[in-house]
Length: 189
Image 1 (cartoon, helix red, strand yellow):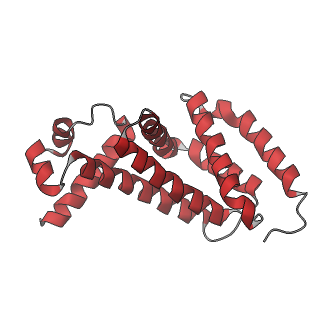
Image 2 (cartoon, one colour):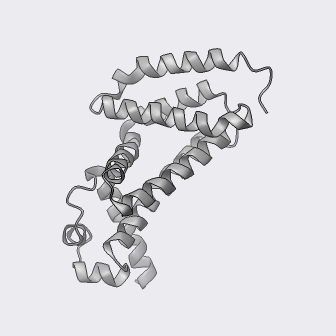
């Protein structure tokens, strides 16, 4: 197996591990044990622990983006419908794992970790861009509305970490408010 193939295999294995276990204990030695190698060999494939974690987090984000693209396709949706769909997808099995990981990264960024500040900024920008492209609403409102919808979903994951269904009422209320708001627009552009 070549260097690039082994690197990709390491990233894929660690992406599954990080999704399942989070970032606690994500030191080089423990990550090396997960993939059956040494910390020195990890540094052969990656310049640093940050390089490794960046590749792993990018892989997780790319996998989720592909999944959501397959679910949503190219059709633009009213914000209320988009939020309903996102919430339903999130509640299915392991689909909430990337959001929980996102919240863990955001928490580290909020405590001033420079690596996670960069990671969170990049992920947030990508998600706002993706969700903005999905929304069938006036262009000026897309990015702020996407950020608001993300905050609502993330907030429910924080408030209801063991039973996302407990967040259904809050999401239903926001869906109703979005539907009321949509009725005030003569036509989305």
